[in-house]
Image (tube, rainbow over all chains, first blue to last red; front, side):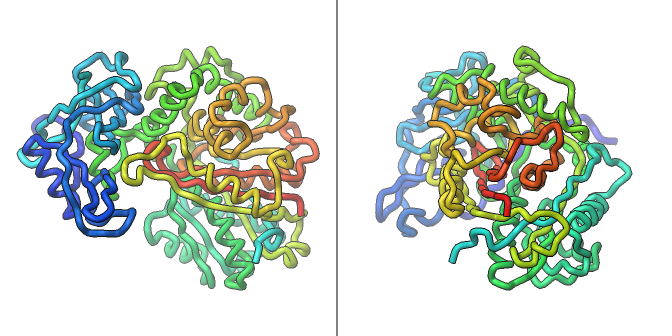
Length: 138
Length: 383
């Protein structure tokens, strides 16, 4: 009775601290947080500044540009959604605004990715609520 | 108040099985408990402190029931494979403070029989931070691979240098009759094995086995009445590293904090250390741990591991049992580091014995090196 469904990668478990960030991504906007009190920039988003524990938050719109800080080409992952996508590039990208985030580098030969390579954001719509920030060579 | 020398390891047992489909996890633990208590010359009713990990959030309660124990002190530390190294630090503090007198540390796992793909099965979904990572497919291998790639980028470290670590561990396993993989391998074998997550090859990765182990700790005074020469806890420290606000240096691993602190607490220097037991989840783990502990400068790890220095007979033998790369790795290997350190300091290792070993350094890494991880360092010595 079960039809073959396309296997889906895990969706983020969005919570109260992260919702504004994910909602912005769904609008195809990428932000980092900046503390409204001490200015410390941060990712992932969270309600309080770890530097001074202030709840004051400013959202800083990102240019979407960054560079690859570290990367690996994944050839083995048994998890549904990923095993069909092998090989893929798992990377940490450093945004122009400072903070780094985990992501995928897409739109190029996985073996062509280099540390320090300039990249730009690609908004990948997964569901009406979830858009992922992936990156491609700029 | 210093913990130095106040508490000793008096019992150690490594379950000899690497494949145990006929055993349950708790059975492996109970058999290991029997082995370690026999080794110590103590009985199960002497135990008034219990530690375990890898059994779920309240699994230690089930384990206490399984062994019908009513301990005065419990620790189900959950910081990954280093948890059992951390247990030793915590038990030393608890025994020194009079919270218990005999602590039993237990581990058991049927990961291989359960066909649990630890490194490449995908992970995440539990903690808040996972929502920012899991959608992109970070395997555990991938997390460590990011560190390896960054190390290669910053320092020019090569895959051949990482392979030297796997080759050395395999050579050590050849002297360990219980080790799962004992046939020698070469650097070329490692480089020819398939890439799992670049730059890490299959033979850069630890195995998945079944297994179990146990440790018994008690006060230095009581240790004098135990069956074998006690091994003193000279110093210990633990640390964590994570992404913080998103500016973390991948090569700043937890050992950089816990290593110097543990050595200082032990009153020991690097050249006092005769043998190292370092969590070798992957070859890169050993390399960055050696650097972070201060055995060589950052970036010199590749050269450090390449000239026989970390082999038996070298200046700093590492993982004399063959480690997780070649002896056993049931998912959380920290306890086996401590067990091998105890056996070395007692001079029980036969063909794999480090001559005149008096000080051993253990370092456990837990979690995902490229995301969030723990590091626990123990300095042990002949009492």
